[in-house]
Amino acid sequence: MVNILSERIIQTGREIVEKLDNMNLSITSALWLYSAEANQWRLVLVSPLVRQKGPRHLYKFVQSCLLKFSDRLISLSDITVLDDRNNMINILKGAIKTGKTLSSIRFTHNYVNGVLIEDAYIYRIT
Image (cartoon, rainbow, N blue to C red):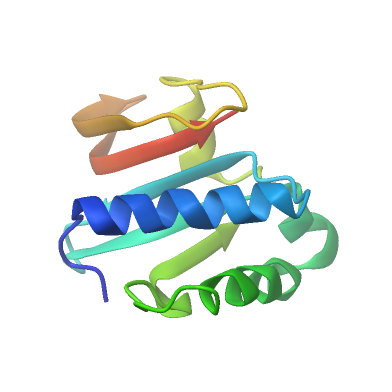
């Protein structure tokens, strides 16, 4: 479980997204999202593949990426894959668009369309 978003965790998340990009998967959004209720950070990966082929399809690729890391800072249980039509992602798209490149945007204590985004670290939102 990721309770603290350290630089190592941020870098590992970036490397996971890069590895998925190198596999030519369509990762349209990627970010760390904090849940105050759970006191937990989750790496959120968004792709139309989730809608087209189901979440298991993308989780298989994510798991293969995780096996390449020796330090095991992030486990599959720290990652959520979502359909690109997800409501929370669409709310974030209303505030931020990064394009296809990877960014480093901290988005903390912001309301977007009346929804509080407690904390997020955004790599990509397209």
